[in-house]
Each structure stands twice: as C-alpha cells, then as structure tokens.
Amino acid sequence: MKREKILLTDYLDSIFPLWEKEVPKFMDYIEEIKLETDEPLPSQRGDIYFVSSGAIAKYHKKIPKRYITPGELIMIKFDSKPLFFRALEDSCILLIQRRDLYQLANNYPVTIQLYDQLLARQEQAADFRELVLEMPKAERLEMFRSKFSSIIPLISRTELAKYLGVSREYLRRFF
Image 1 (tube, rainbow, N blue to C red):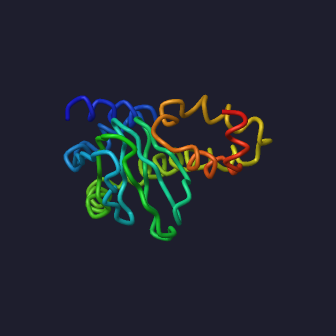
Image 2: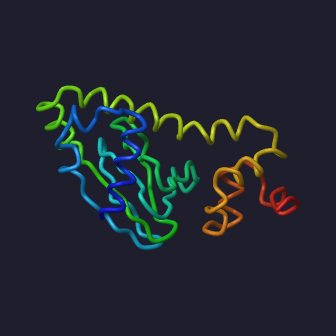
Image 3: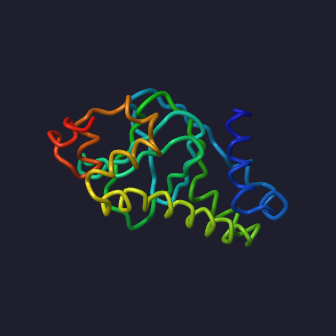
C-alpha cells in the first residue's frame, strides 16, 4: 500500500500543501480497498475514495456518468441520486470514511479547509461530462480519447455512445 499512499500524499500536497502539518493524523484513517474487474465499489454517503490504480465507472440508472482513473477522487454526497460504481479493471481504492472525517475535523478544525479543496477538485472532474455534452458531436469522441484513452478498451461501444450522448450508429461511423 506504500505506493498507493504516496500517490495520495502527492495529490493532497498539490491541493493543500500544509495538510501533513495541519492534519497530521489524516493518513492514519486511510483504508485500502481492492476491487476485481466488474466488482461494485461499496460506497457510503459522505465517504471519500481515491483511485490509486485501475479504473472505476459511475452510473445512474445504467447510464455512465463518469470514469475515474488513478489520481482522482470519488466523493459520495449526502443528497446524491442512487449511484452505482464498478471497477472496469482490477483497482486499488483508498478510503476515508465520513465518521473518520468528523473525528479529524473535531481534532483538527483545518480539516474542513482540506475537505473544501477536495470537494472543489471533485466538482472539476465531475463537470467533464457536461463539458463534453456541450460540444458538437464530432468533437466529443476526440475529447474523450484525449482524457480517457485507457478507458476505451474497457467499455463497450454502446456504453461509450451513452456517455457521449450519441447514437451507437453515429459512433460506429467515426470509431
């Protein structure tokens, strides 16, 4: 788990450089979850997940909403719709549970600032699909390829078409 934690510490350094000094016990609360291909992520509202290897897909009513690759967060909001997450390939996920965040915030109030930075980064990643759907159809596939080239072999063309908001026939002509 050492390599996975290094990836997480680098990520935290990039968004909140003083986190180790301000919240020194943060890494003590991190748990590792190993998922096999197609295994669901056991998600709980309020928990924060960090993908350290592999790839995870997020779905709402069987429609792909997001792909999460190493170095990205999954934050499960309290008011979110029923979501389903599954591993597209063998994956390693680091987890901090909501109750542990509360305990950290109680002991280290600056944890709230760290959480705010995590939330801002999460929202940027979540906005990617909306950005793609606003583009002309012809540009969507190229944008997806530039960001998620490693995801393409892991999903069906039908799933890719749903994600891009195009018909399977349209995708077949350009892919």
